[in-house]
View (cartoon, rainbow, N blue to C red):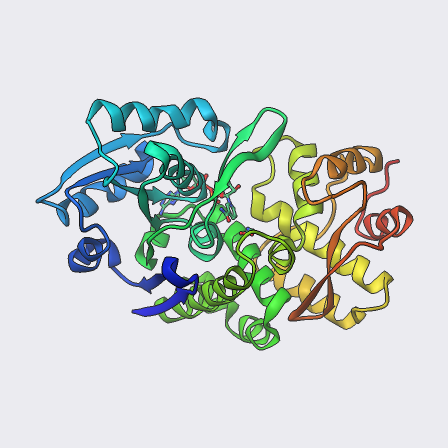
Length: 362
Ligand code: NAD
Ligand code: GLY
């Protein structure tokens, strides 16, 4: 097992990464010391892993709420199902929530924990690669609003993140690949050596070799933990975690949610952001080629979908919360492993980068 910490003073918390940790009863009980527990999951994940988790907590009042599966249900309405269950089973302020699932379950459980009785504790048991390398760490919690993704939420940190890499064995291959986009993102923004390591080991990662999985997830969590510890509420540095996301969110929404997975859209978005970095004279063309090669090996898209238009992309990007005071703000690369934030990109430069990545319709 590997452990890293998110250093937030009295709210510091550990991230454990290892095989079979959902059955590590002592570890789970160490982070769930109180009598009441509410496990939040969805039916598919519960079928696979709920009994294992419950078996570790025989002496608790261990209630369960299963939410409908999917991003479409990441809403205030679904959130109230958690509150209904907590109240019906008389959970007190000392209760503890457990998020057992991917990023959708993690984001909703965290938000519910931040609101229930003005805040109760929670832990994350992430089961998707994306949640293990990104969503479960850092305390961003939210639900979607019809007018925008993740628009209603809170910064609220878990007490621990326990990552059982064995859960990845049941994750659908396309979901696994989408998670790899966020892995590559972490390397690109902060760690050139890790990017080189990925180039050398991505096949082991795709084959889900345990050592490769643990090393990869550990690196990503360390990178994210360090960024979050420096800038918990995204006043500056934390925005680099959004590398590729301004474009990615536009592609995801433009194609209709569900057509491309989040990670797939981020993959293409990172290529556009890298192309933009070249236009601004900071990134070398050879670096862009390395990025595309690695994404290809993970079967991730590297071009803008042909069905989208320039106007659509711009309209969608201007809705994105990463654009402040009418200023286009982008996360760009100086080189692989070194991201920076720029407020000085012109609309024409953005158009040119999108065209270079296959966007041909005005
Ligand atoms: P998800 O939670 O929808 O999970 C993807 C699919 O895989 C679902 O169908 C889920 O039921 C299934 N699944 C998960 N684990 C499984 C397993 N082990 N075996 C079989 N099936 C499994 O999506 P995701 O990609 O995990 O997360 C995406 C969400 O995360 C988005 O809502 C996004 O906004 C959010 N997110 C949050 C942060 C953050 O910092 N809070 C960061 C990135 C993404
Ligand atoms: N996924 C972006 C963040 O956590 O800040």
